[in-house]
Image (cartoon, rainbow, N blue to C red; front, side, top):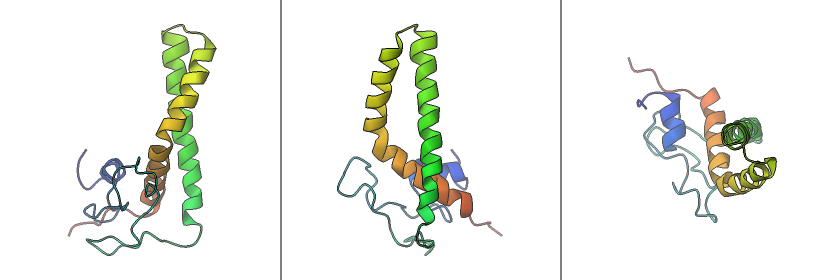
Length: 123
């Protein structure tokens, strides 16, 4: 993924504006005491990550979309391609969503802020 795109910011947990500074305090989503802590501003460009109170409530839509995409993909793999019983899908989907919950939480926040803050145009 090329630096300067929104996908770069989402994939590598970088500032949506300059794509140099880190978005989250700790890059490992499985450090559960700190998985949701974000920087207030970008260390490189000073972009504020605290847009307004309740701004990140909209990230629930992105989280829902990611979870639905994961569910449809897993359903197609387990039930349609592998011809397994639906119970294998339900159990594996429940486990997978539980394990990926911190990752989905972070990616949804990054997707949401990238909808409103884009990379700076270089002149």
